[in-house]
Length: 122
Image (cartoon, rainbow, N blue to C red; front, side):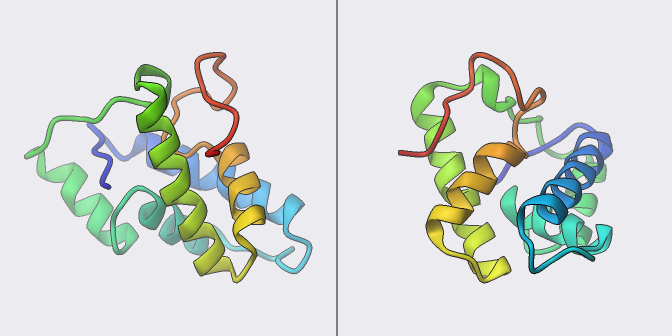
């Protein structure tokens, strides 16, 4: 899975949101840094690093992907499962905790509270 953007503005906002959520939800990570959040968001979007996300986005070679709220339910669930797995692996948390965090972070949604979003990846 890989999600493309027309600029890096949205991934930057998502990284700030993820940092805030992880600091408040994962008690073992109160000092979670923005740079770590950027790497995590890049991986959740299908890139190996923030540098790769940035380079791919600024290349202008790809059409932007739809945000979650514009995708069918199956695509939303697939994205959430992928993102949950990345969170669990990278943060060393359980899959269930990864699923809960992915549903809160919604890194591939323009509006994380949009009514068109599925509630979980199950």
